[in-house]
Length: 313
Ligand SMILES: [Mn+2]
View 1 (cartoon, protein in one colour):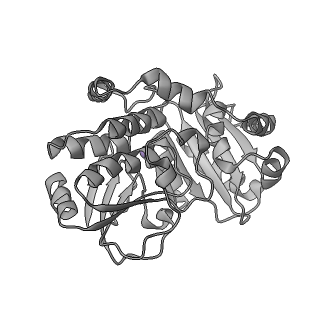
View 2 (view 1 turned 120 degrees about the vertical axis):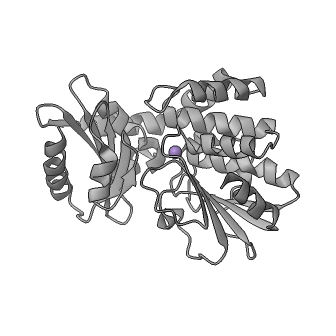
View 3 (view 1 turned 180 degrees about the vertical axis):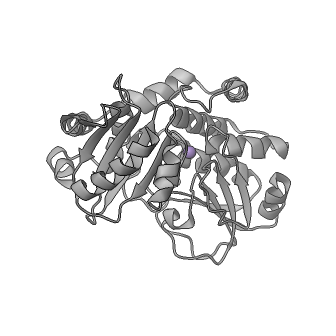
């Protein structure tokens, strides 16, 4: 499959690298990792993400400024990254062939070639495997992007997906010139004041349920307006809720611009939140998943969710 994907790339002229809406470090990092590789192969390449405000803490990734919101006029191949279902790419067309790089267990396999590794730490790791399998030299810029993808999705080597293979990959990326402290400072030490103000508001809503095993925090559009923060600044809120000693599942209920409510779930030890997200039409990983609710009031969303969680606790 990895060889097949390489053949398809070789036989394509104009390629789109695209990741899911509201991208994280893995989504953007893994797509940007392929940019210098394809440029070296003399391909016409455009990196696309339809999101209006990309997370500013990822602006150090080589190629960040080249990311466009629109597809080019002509292209013959789409490569998608870190995206469990086609609709999360935010594009209409399905005309070109698709290679689907991902590690979500819930991936719907919408590609013509699907490189899905549910046990992998990150989509960055799938990209790394692709480069290795095809004996492609890893450019320094790609190493930085893959490393960023890796630390973003493992919370800097904290989660269950971290194993010897991950450290061996990290070791090689560092050998290729990645400076871990630089990446950590870029990702974590450049917070805007608006984000800290937003987090204060979100944490103020923290409520415990089900014998304090579930912690729920809320984000409203009003909070975004009051603080001037954007929605990507709330990314960590469910992790913070989970970090409480008694808590197994941390939940963020997020009011979207269109009034719908997005639910993100983080578990600590045993609840498979991808299973719960799937029940409500979403997806993700065992310890991190999400869905958009059919309800648009916090109370109804929460009632339904707590009923589902109760059975798993
Ligand atoms: Mn990922």
